[in-house]
Length: 251
View 1 (cartoon, helix red, strand yellow):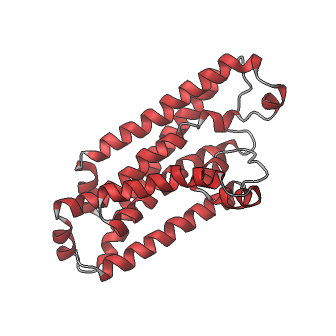
View 2 (cartoon, helix red, strand yellow):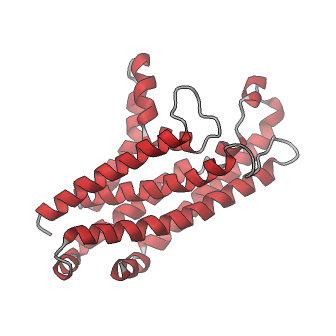
View 3 (cartoon, helix red, strand yellow):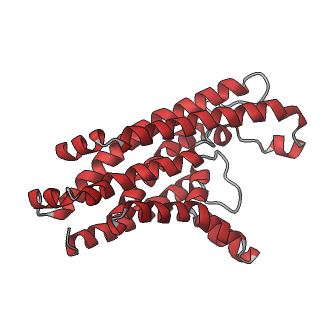
């Protein structure tokens, strides 16, 4: 774990990835909340009645999910690209230990950073809304849960990216697959019959993230904790597959 921590914090992509994640989560959150504040009095009454000040202030996470996934992917694929994975596996023949160490280092680090950034985005968003748009406090029903699960969502996606990187082992290919799962698959679902859309769409990672960060998810979405469970299952499955493959394949 010490060696994995050294590798993680010294790779150039790590601070760049976190900087982009912070910029997207907070920066886009600020832009979105300012836009809502500016157009609040012209919004449809139905939209204002169903307005969620929590999820809208955290909307930047749905863009930051791309940056956080790339951090997880590059954490492992950079070793394959440089060939240093051979030294890692030679030093630790029990390859599952390498996977566990990477999961712990990546998971703990991204969870801590994500929770801080998501909390900051929430607090800034509520400050922008104050006096014009209805606001929420951390003590409100479901608010703290939504903020905490917003950070957990990003951390789980980082681990998902790590699993993809372990399976595919090539940076560009893994990033392409990750981006397609988050961006292209939802577009494809739109063209499915409407009866299928409601069933399939709720299992999309982005839809799970929106449910995790919503105080009151819509009827065709999972509620917060079931959505978290489904996403965690995705992560566990892909990490198990990755561990089996790294045990069986050459470095």
